[in-house]
Image (cartoon, rainbow over the protein chains, first blue to last red):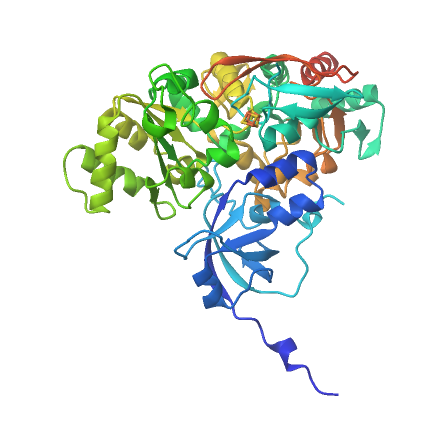
Length: 137
Length: 403
Ligand code: SF4
C-alpha cells in the first residue's frame, strides 16, 4: 500500500486582510431564519478580487480555512463581481466573521469588526457549522 | 398605513395584507422590511434551563436570577419601543444594574456628539426638501437602510429640488469597497484604503482651505470644490467611518466646521437605537455604558464588550438583541457561564444558551408604541395583528414587580 504523500503536504498559506460589510439578502435571511441554510450560505463566504484568487490559486466555490490568534473558520471563497483592485477581501458581518475578530479594544469597548488579518489556505473541511461558533447545541 | 421596524428609517407608509392572523404580504417595504414584518420562522417559547416552562414560572425564575445577582447587566432594547426603553431604565435603576446597548460598539459615540449638539444635524425631511449634495461615508445605505436614497436623499423630488437626482442632486460615496450605494454615485466614488478615513479627512481639509494636498491631489481638489458649492449638504456617517476614526470624533467636528452648509446624519441600523440613546441621555447624561448605583456612573468598563471580557457581570438580561450572534467569539466566551435571561419575540443564538426565555410581542406588528428615527423624529408604531403576547414593556414591568 502506497503512502498518500498529499496527506502530509500542507496547502500553501497566505496572509490576508479582510473587512466586513452588510448585505441585504443576508439580512433578509437573518430576519426570516437565522438558523437556516440560507443564512449560512450567504454568511459563510469570503469574497476576493480576481487577482488575489489567481495569485493564491483559488477558484470560486473552493472552501478555505481562515485562521488567526482568535479562532479559525472554514468558509466558501467567491470571486468578486466588482472591479476590485485586490489586497483586501470581504466578509459579510456574521458569526463566521466574528470568530476572527480580536477582543482587544484598549479598554474602549469597540472591537475591530472591520479590520481582520488572517491566514488563508485551501481546505477540504466542511463549512464551519454555526453551532460551533455560537455554543448552542 | 403601518410602520416598518426593519431599520431606523421607520418607513411609515407600509401596507400589510393579513391572512389567518399573520402578515401575508407587505407593500412599500424593502426586502429587509418585508422579512421583518412577516416575522421570524421560530417563535420564542417560555423556558427555564432550555426546558419548556409556563410563562409565570419564567418570570419568577428571571426575577430570582436578578435577586441573586450582585452585578447584573441589562443589555439591548434597541429593537423595543420608547415605552419599553423607559421601563428598562427603571428596572436597571431599581436593581442597580449596568446598562448598555448595541450603540456601545456601533454608533453610540456619534449619537452622543449629536445629542450634545457638538455636530450640526438636520431632519430627513429637510434633506428631502433641500439637499443638493449627499455624501455617503462608510455607509452602504442600499443594503442597510435600503429606502434611504429613494425616500429621503437622492431620488425624491423635494420643495427646492424639483428635479431630484437627474439634475438637482449629487451623491458621493467614500468607502473601502464599491458598495451598492457607491455604484449609484457614478463618477463620485472615492475608494480609500482600509482605515484610510483619517488621512482622507486631513487631505480634504487641506483642499478645502485652498492648499493642494499631497494625497490624491486632483480628486481631492475636485471633491472640495463640489462640497464648497453645495447649498445644503448632508454627510451620512456609516459605521465604516465610525470604526475607522474610532474615538477621534474631533476630526469629524473639525471637518464639519469647515463645511457650514453640511449636516451630519448618523446612519443607524436597529430601529430604535437612537431612542434608547436619547432616553438614557435624558435620564443620566450618557447614551450607554452606565451603572446605576444610587446615581448613574458612566465608564468604559460598563461597555458589554469590556464587562464580558473582564467577567465583571454575573447575570445578563437581553432584550430584543442577539449578542451571541453579533459579538466576537473571543468576547462571548464568558456568556455560557452566567445566567442569561432573554426577552425576544423570536428564537436567537442568545436564546439557545439562555437560562430563561420569555417571549414577547413583536413591536410594530403585534404591539403599538413609538420609536425614534435616525434623525431624531418620533414615529408611531401601530399594532397590525391581535394575539396574546405581552409586550417587552409589560414583561419588564412584571420583572420589576417580582424582583
Ligand atoms: S428601509 Fe428600513 S424601515 Fe424602510 S422598509 Fe426597509 S427595513 Fe423597513
